[in-house]
Amino acid sequence: MSSALFVDYYELLEVDPRASSQEIKAAYRACMVRDHADQNPGDQQAQERMILLTRAKQVLLDEHQRLVYDRQRSRWHAISAFGTAPPRWTGGRAPDTPFESSPHRVEVDLRDVSLTKLIVGVGVAAMVGGLSFAARTMADRASRRRRRRW
Image 1: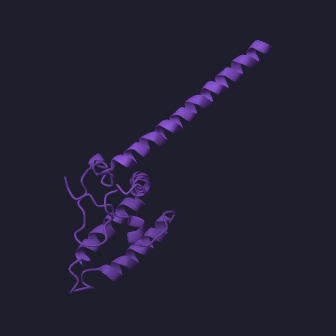
Image 2: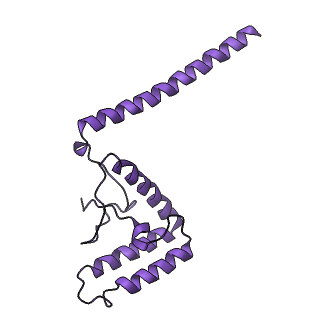
Image 3: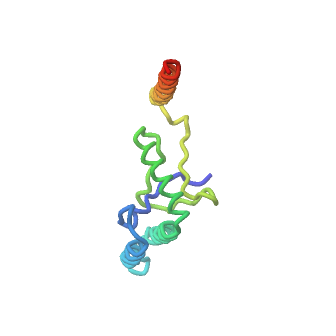
């Protein structure tokens, strides 16, 4: 498996997640002018930034890939709140794309999750599921009572 780093393409291109395709293209051109390897001859990481900028443009301009990426990005932000998300790319070698169908997949190794966080997460899920079940049960009972009265 290749490196498990999350790259925030919106942050890389310095655009808002609601940016239009024209805004993304303009941001890509501006970043490429600034970060191009020819413009930065002594910078060893310029080539890696160029690779990621090109990937970001390709993904964000394709509607389907952008939708998939946005889902993965929201998952990454959700699991980063628990402290179990893959690290964010901050420079260095551009991460490989591990999966052909979904190159932006976020995976969590449950061995990295502390037992306390796992128990709390399971407890919250059980509580929400239990509350949902209890609400449905109460609604069914109330519905049956109303039917018996008529």
